[in-house]
Image 1 (cartoon, rainbow, N blue to C red):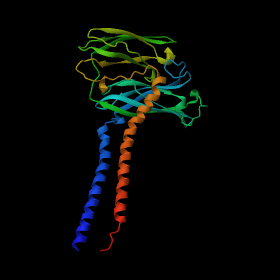
Image 2 (image 1 turned 135 degrees about the horizontal axis):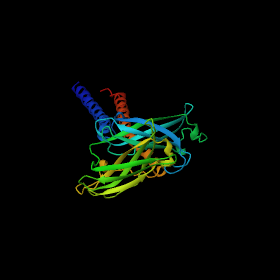
Image 3 (image 1 turned 135 degrees about the vertical axis):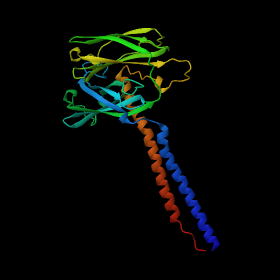
Image 4 (image 1 turned 120 degrees about the vertical axis):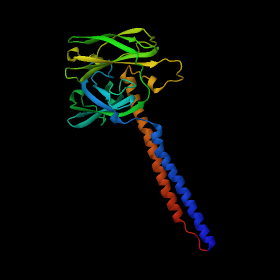
Length: 314
């Protein structure tokens, strides 16, 4: 009788130990998610406005004739946003025909700060693999925030911009200068310009190449920008400029999210890569979920296996 009793106790301990270990594995899958810190809440960013057009040239679009969506996003949260990804879906008479995704032009956005985005709907991103539809046929486009990546770092605040816009029926030109009024030398100085129509809707943008790889205190750099894709000047009423840079402080041992600018001078070379970045971010979440599912299945199998066994009669 004692042998049977202690045998049952030993068996119960093994079951409890196995269940505990498998539950611990499941909890590990759950705890991986916050440890990754993949992204902040998409509610921290808001789409303010956007519009679409058919690209007249391949200046920034991959191909002339592409459907292009331009818009603006704002950080409505309480923390800085390192980067934001937006997702766009195009429709023809209510039918979904294509999608696109891309990172917003701008890093380390402070609360209330705005930045533009550019979505190029490429042939490989057609929903039904049917390329017979034309960009001119698009009747609606929906743009949403994919996800955000937060940061505690700030963009260098020592750069100031002075500019003047000149427009005619053909082209709108902005001539300006970026000056380092701060105390640090910075690199990768760029200017991001957002163009608006009379209603305040974004109609175009410009993202310059690096104006200066090393801008010391007191130094300045001139720039001239026009709307991408030869967007006509008669439709532009105003503009705003966002200046970006990276730190060159020698005390920083390695690049940090706040000192990283994503150079995207050509959509065709970078848009597919950005799509893969989005997938890799979600893949981390999927991996964690898979671990949890595997752990739960393992628990069920072990319990069934243990209870399926029958002790031989003494």
